[in-house]
Image (cartoon, rainbow, N blue to C red; front, side, top):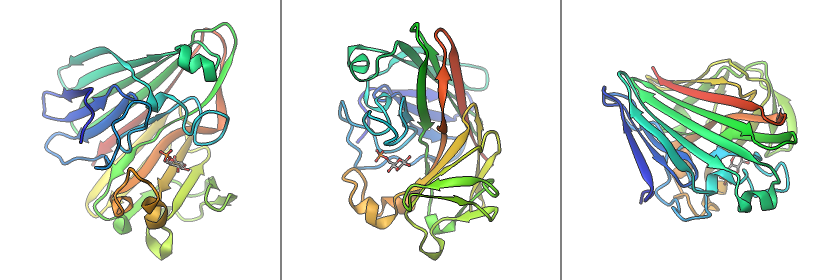
Length: 277
Ligand SMILES: O=P(O)(O)OC[C@H]1O[C@@H](O)[C@H](O)[C@@H](O)[C@@H]1O
């Protein structure tokens, strides 16, 4: 099953990305000459008002259950509009937009414009989220680009770049320190993983599986979230196949610890860049 409002981007070198207007969401990324790098659940509901399970959901203006709004906010369940699509010399680009509406103002009383710019080319995918406060009072939000990386076997995956950082473990509801440089998911039964790492900023995160490595770089986002539901939690997710957890790892660019404060008329920009090495 696929989204019926999908937009396809193809760079001159053959790199591709697919975006859905529903949720303003990247669904697929294939680097030039490479395989699919994002996980999209075959059981995802492509239904108005529901979130698509996979790709790069946009969490805005609330991350997870950190406030009164629906989990992860409303941006991922609303229709966005396409404002630009073009092919450059080395890449292809699309810009999607979401503005406040009666429905958003009913639960979040702010005038805003979100723009999601997606650029694909060579071995890279760049996803940029910009928010402009169109109102005359300051606004505050938390946000994330909730990227589902496709993996072949979660047991063989490591994430480097988080050593020395404090994190909030959302499963244990506790704060902890990441001591080792390498986070081995799947090892020693660490399968149900839900962590917000604070202050990651522009440190590159290296996600390695055998000879494949994806380098994840963030700008503008302070934190990173690492999430995998593991087998038990996955079994309770109606839009995931039972074994889906072993084929994905979410590495999310996030602003969670310190909400973004946006004075009237000002803009904020955050970016996640993925590169297949
Ligand atoms: O099932 P959802 O709403 O897409 O959320 C998936 C997960 O998203 C992660 O970012 C959160 O840290 C988890 O707590 C949450 O379970």
